[in-house]
Amino acid sequence: MTTDTVGGVWSYSLELVRALESSGVRILLATMGKPLSQQQRSEVLWLDNVEIRESEYKLEWMDDPWEDVDRAADWLLELEEIAKPDVIHLNGYTHGCLPWRTPTLMVGHSCVFSWFEAVKGKTPPAAWHRYYEGVRAGLFAAGRVTAPTLTMLQALKKHYGDFNATDPIYNGRRFDRFFYRHRKTPLILTAGRVWDEAKNIAVLDEIAPRLSWPVYVAGEARHPDGGTAELVHARPLGHLSPSKLAEWYSYAPIFVLPARYEPFGLTALEAALSGCALVLGNIPSLRELWSGAALFVSPDEPERIQQALEMLIQNPALRRTLAKKAAKRARSFTPDRMARQYMKQYRELCSTRSPDTAQSASDNDNFNS
Image (cartoon, rainbow, N blue to C red; front, side, top):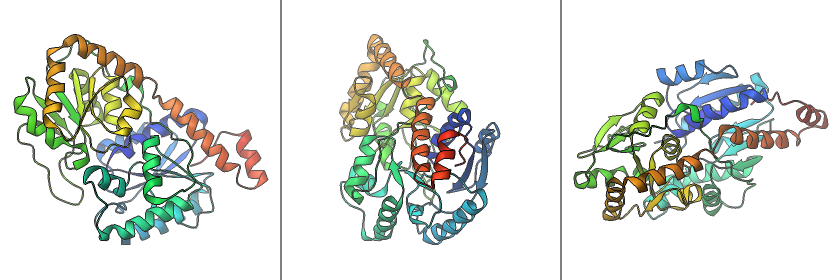
């Protein structure tokens, strides 16, 4: 399984690895993006079914990544030769078109072209042509492609064509990592990469002085390629460990994510499990997941976002009702459910191999990925 160490794909990957352990699945996890942090290393130490292979190769969406992408391709093929996996689970695109000997499942977590459409209202400049060609080739070469929402799958098909897609598989989070406190602290919380325009955290910084409660922002402000996003009015918490972020969720009565682009939104799920009322950007992916269990606001209307937040501040009964609805919805996004759906895909991919291999896969859940 490939993963990156920069964003939510890391959290998704570890949650899936944990959930697959009970099925006897062993995973060779190949990391890219940047070195593992000490916190990330400690998270892996508790997992018995994973072996880490670490790299610092740039990801395909980073600045001038192509030399690294090519070097990573050679590295991944070497890992396939050594590990001899039953399935290759790709959490990126361009390596889908490598000459794999093993069936591939690709998961589309986000992409630059759908990001540009949602955030900038246009297609990326010509400099992104090589990225487009690499992503498209990877999608069409993969054995199967899924995504964490139907919205994301449809976006990929819109931009890259009619590749071999299967049903979406929603992400999951364990309940026991989060605390549902009934007595909360008067504050508003958001979490995400501060530098990512898609998260739209700048709008919260703008309206923060006009709200009755302070706005706290958890997330990395420094872009992987350099540059830092500054906050003026909201209170920055910086990058928090998972346990520290869970603590902040537990104290927050309101979690706000006014995103312009969010293929799934793990932070909203984590906040809902922690008893937060959700205020979310009115975009198709978040409506797909949270319709009826959150307040939705236009990402481009600061006054409407302010009004929605202030309404919840002044109405404790509504806050509690929304928090209960969000928590109930959140408990349907379980890691076990996610793992079962991935196991189904793994088995079906294994059945495309030789008859002997297919029989072995159908009789034995001890896959290597």
